[in-house]
Image (cartoon, rainbow, N blue to C red; front, side, top):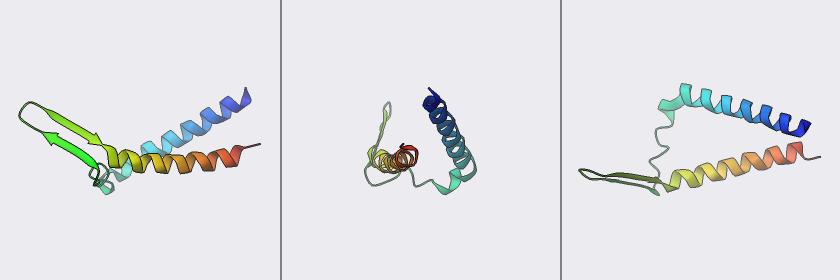
Length: 75
């Protein structure tokens, strides 16, 4: 059970860090959401946005971070 508490504390710290980063540096990451594989369609009554390229990049980054945490806390 102590492992769950450790994971929740680390997850909270990571979420706080990401939130602060987004608040203070949101003007620097305007390219996120406008990558080559991001699909956007607008018409008079319809708006559709599929951020495929951004989600691939985010998935790769989160996989690397999760792998580092897993190796760090592996017992």
